[in-house]
Length: 189
Image (cartoon, rainbow, N blue to C red; front, side, top):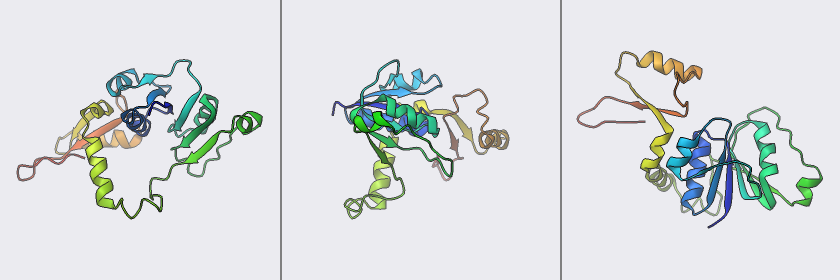
């Protein structure tokens, strides 16, 4: 409660992490090369200007240079959480004197498993229920830049553009595929 948190990387993962930190009464800033002011306003976040000395810094940019930025933004004895997946790309970090004298901690995040002490109580159903409850927050609608109707004639072309990474003038954050009604129910993913 009350921690100063900075999230480096304003894609969907970074904005979701920032939103969760804000829900836990942290004061949260976002650093991203894209203009994410609209999303920050909707989620109650601040856009990073020149602030430093954060208690927790979360790296979600997917860029190894972003992790180095996190070390500079962290306060003495702060924790940097690595939430990016670098695959087989090397990630070089400046772990010289300042890193050690400031006693920084780098923690990896693991999305595939729970810590052993929580696993017995947090089964799949409980985790899914919580995730769906958190995702139902209307403030997160700012992450959706388009609804693509699966049954629309333009869907195949629009979907191919998404797979190519061509956001077609949108924010490029997240598109929602809306499936046609099935027996009166609308299924969205």
